[in-house]
Length: 313
Image (cartoon, rainbow, N blue to C red; front, side, top):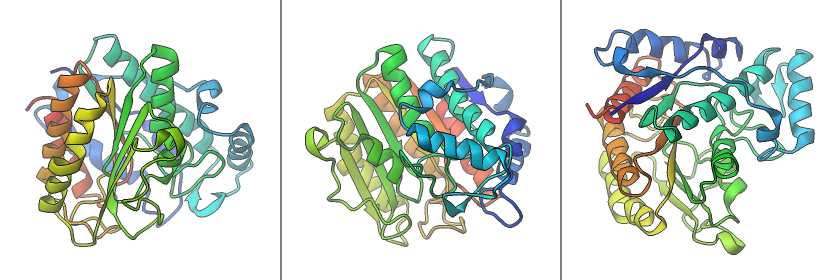
């Protein structure tokens, strides 16, 4: 399989300050490790693209977008909450993260690559329509899902979020929309406090949200059971035309921000399960975007397992 890979040093310009877990070293450590792997040169490089504001506005309120721009450009160190640290370059970097996800998807849909992964920051799944939360400025996966529908005419999109934290922003964006299936595995109760099992969508979107909350201490066995008993059957029922992964790697046993005990290898297993469903329903089309993951030694190894599985290794 041809797997696309996107990275650009521009993402290092999003400066979150000393001691912040969502730091540029997450990407530099990952790139250092990946360049030493035998499979890395076989990945297909995907270029950087800046998202047009029109696409950001499909998910975020115009007043929020302007507030984010002004906050960053004037040098205010936080946007909306103390955990969303920003710098003067952060707004532009966030536009490039969202746009490059679209470029990755474009290449999948054009048949140039089979699937792909974007090593981007800032992450996105906590970002709400009108508010920045949890290290996130723009909701990259939500913007990409709307782009796929409006630009490419796809209807049924699935987002699988395996970050240790529930993607409140993604769920709230789509919870009344039956055309977007949002599935999340996450530690619960934990930040941000959403993602209970009974949150299954609202109105016409009832049933198009599947939350699989995990107790602290859960590991590969519990996650495998969730996949086999709930997640994979839900995908079989939905028949997505494209699969997007909110790929946070902070459910790893050694991650400092969570208490879930996934092994490094399990990220490869989950990837293979989703690739199998993509092959069955989505012509193999799958795009994965980085969310969390804060252990600078283990994050690169988890991403490597993910990329190997995407590449069919």
